[in-house]
Amino acid sequence: MAGASAILAAMAGRFAGGIVVLTGSGISKESGLATFRDPDGIWARVRIEDVATPEAFARDPARVHEFYNLRRRQLLAPEVVPNPAHLALARLEAAWGEEVLVVTQNIDDLHERAGSRNLVHMHGELLKARCVGCGVVVAWRDDLAVETPCPRCARTGGLRPHVVWFGEMPFEMERIGEALGACGLFVSIGTSGSVYPAAGFVAEVRAGGRAHTVELNLEPSEGRSLFAEAIHGPASRIVPGFVDRLLSA
Ligand code: BV8
Image (cartoon, rainbow, N blue to C red; front, side, top):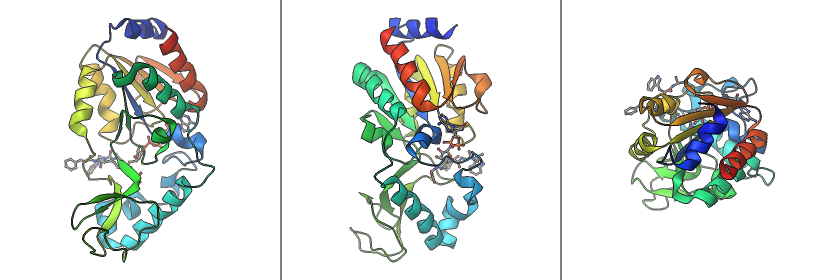
């Protein structure tokens, strides 16, 4: 089904069940945050095995803290702000409320700062810390170190970034699965489609046989062939136009 008529159908409620928007690091690129697999991406500079696995944290926690401290400081820099793509998604939620769920792989807080509230951080949040001793999760905007005591149990050595590393189960998978099963429109923005289970969401939606699927990305992702429609270009340019199309249909 051509994009525009599918959008109209979504508007007409033929794809009733809501809209799920999956975002990846590409949506935050124009806000100044690095992606992972672009030539200038994070994994071009550090190895996943050294900084983004539980084994890495057990082996060299100081190295892992340094990796996330640098990213946390960068995220909190005054020049890093939501871009028009984040703002457009917040506008869509403002118009359609509970119908819109954003599932982000990103650990930045740019969706929140843009105004999105129906939001799942499936890979966790850079501005939160978790104690492996007592399990508390707290807001955290400073550097973390091995000797940083837990604010609740006072243990040292147990505070970690509240993010999902490779080999760890992403958060809120049940809620995400329900939303994918019910949605009438699945939109993927700024992700290479190379990390699971997020990369498998489009196949999960297609298996339901009802929803329209759209990829909005700088270039075709690994999962491009699974999407019924694709719009390529920088997110801050193509996402507002796409949201306008939805809202004006
Ligand atoms: C799990 C948080 C199972 C931390 C991240 C062996 C053992 C265990 C699991 C596996 C295994 N082998 C494979 C797996 C699965 C594994 C996986 O998928 N590996 C990959 C490498 C093959 N997945 C996992 O481990 C997941 N957990 O499977 O658990 C389980 C089951 C039971 C019990 C326990 C466990 C957990 C994965 C989560 C890892 N954490 N992040 C942190 O951020 O440091 S993943 C990381 O990748 C980020 O979250 C990131 O968002 C995500 C995906 O990357 P993208 O966002 O897509 O970024 P990328 O650079 O790749 O692409 C950017 C795109 O944007 C590009 O397409 C580019 O063209 C585009 N773009 C660029 N600029 C723009 C743009 N688009 C628009 N506008 C622009 N301006």
